[in-house]
Each structure stands twice: as C-alpha cells, then as structure tokens.
Image (tube, rainbow, N blue to C red; front, side, top):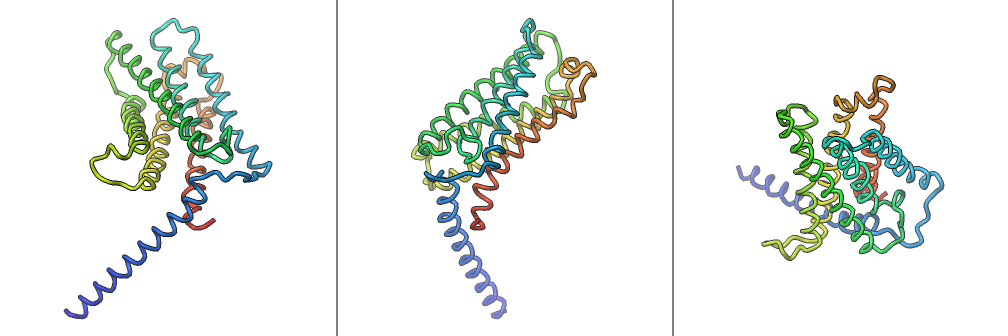
Length: 254
C-alpha cells in the first residue's frame, strides 16, 4: 500500500512537471510565432499564390450564388444572398485577417487586424441572423414546417455557434467584464480553436445546401452539385491550415 502511494505521488509530480513544461513551450513558442505577424517576414511565391486561392474561391462562388438568386422577386431569395455574404464572404475574410498568406495586410499591427476581424465578423453575424429570419418568415408565411432537413437542423445550430463565438470575441476584447479572472492568452487560444470549429460547422451547412431543391433548380442538371463541394472544402482546408500552422506546428517548435 505504501509503495502504491509513493508511485501515485511520483506520477502526480511527473504530470505536474509535464504540464508546466507544456505551458512554458505554449506561451513562449506560440505567442512568438502565431500571435504576431513579424515585420519583414518574407513569403515565398508559392505561398503567396496559395494565399490568393481562398480569395478567388470566395469571389467566384459568391458571384455565382448571388447571380443565381437574382432577381430578388421572392422573399426566399434573400436567404441564399444573406447567407452567402455571411458564410462565404465575410467570415473567411475575418479569419484571414490573421493569416500570413491570405491576409490583405499581413504586416499591419495586430490591433488593426483585430479591429478588422471583429468588424467583418459582426457584419457576418448580422447577415447570418438576417438570413435565418428570412427563411423562418418565409416558412411561416408558406405554412411549411421548420427544421425538417439536415441543412435546416445544422443551420440553426450553426447560427447559435456563430452568435456564441462572436460573444466570446467580445469577452476576449474586454476580459475584465468576466466575474472571474482568466488570462488573455487562454481566451485567445479558446477563441481561435472554437472559431475554427464554428466555421467548419458553417461550411458543413453550406455543403448540405448544395443538395437543396433550390440549388438543384439553379443547376437544372447541367452541372453536378458535387463540383461545388470544392468551395467548402477549399475554404475549410485554408482555415484549418491557418490554425494548424499558427498553433499546432508552433507548439512543436516548427
């Protein structure tokens, strides 16, 4: 029994020492490599090209969906327009503010990037909630049931996630309003992690929308909806790569 107690105590000390080491590496390495875009940082031609790909995807896909929704002669048409602006245009651009490859101003001071991030994100949330209000009103007026498809069910869940994530960003900007003390660096990491998950949920909802009756009517059998899956896939990979580079690789000291 005494041997087991000593073994448990030794394991506890080893775990505490390991956690302390992880915390030290996290704070020093990630804060140095991920949180700041260093002035004078040079980017290769390949990286710059790959950094423009998400913007091309955003511009091309949003232009096509907005064209398909025109003319806006039905209330429903505002739903794809507003959701496209929120999910395909504003949200990724808000995230790319902190990307060394896809940011329009990678050498800008971090406060400027943060300001543009929350401005774009608030605009995205406004579009998304407006799109939710439009589709809900349209279903009420048409007498259709709510949330009977995977797209609708995941969509309302994603709207809640985006709202909570935006609220979390406010807490990160003003941590003193919390009733308890949390280090700012912890809030930043949580915001980045859950923001990535939230946008992946939004892209999954977008992928399900590609198989809706409305989009099938837009394509009219001339194109396969599978082709347009490249949009959420490429945007998702870009955001995941940004998170992986800024946090995961930085953790291992790359």
